[in-house]
Length: 373
Image (cartoon, rainbow, N blue to C red; front, side, top):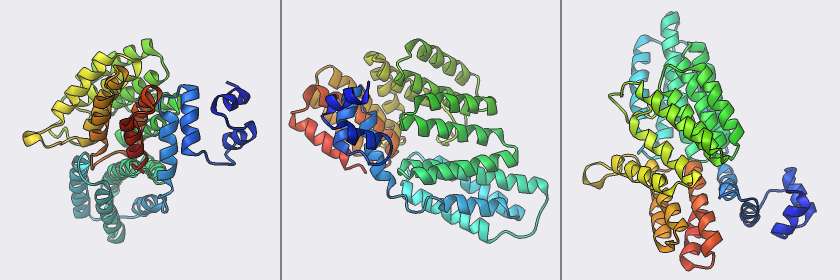
């Protein structure tokens, strides 16, 4: 579409749109919504507008990276390595449910503790163990930062984790840094970049379950690009790869791809492919396995996106009240990944706005999405 065509579609001047296109002016939420509808972006631009606002909270984007650089250039006693490894492992298992700000703060406390209490060299092997433990911690913190909408901090931390993994000779950590790149690109609408990052990650590591998640991210990008044949092939490839890995004793560890997580990937892909029946089936399975005894949600972020998927399916079927109710329930989750949540919530927002824009319930949902920042 030409700039003149877009100008006519959204009723904004070509000059104003040109300044936005060239980065001279920030887009308003209303313009993002109009462009999303005109370009058929299915909520991507709406989510991007919300995330731009959230990212302004990122006032110290280099904080984690600076701490990690201090660790990378220091030495440590073996007892500190053992304690760090045990703590990092447990923190990774708390990622799914623990308050993100609190978890990041504790991780930073550990980073400061390690950086401030390092002593003399203990040998190459011990130093490599330290780099590995710090690399896992960097991956965790980077994911948390991105969940909070702190894009600059998350990218700086991801880059630091990649350096740590490379220096430690740990291909799995390097693979996960590429997976993070794919995730960042996915939630920012840079779908070709998702595929490039996923394939770079597979070049770095195919021997651990990160390979499955990389394939899953590629499948999500293919779904958003409308490439259904390659989507189905990629999903089949990922399922086959997953079956080759033994199940972890701690599937709640964030950097372990358990079988239940594949339902989560398939749900997202089938929703975007327009296969509502399969999307809903996978969504219900995600909710079932993510709910523990007494109705306690042990995977609240996955469950929230599953509910939004059910909301999209309901909206497509004309069930506006059910769609809004399910969507609002999803957005009430205390533990959330803001970019991922906004990506799917904005997709539901887009469907509702195209078909039921004047409905009070739809307006209410739009206001709640806006408040997520």
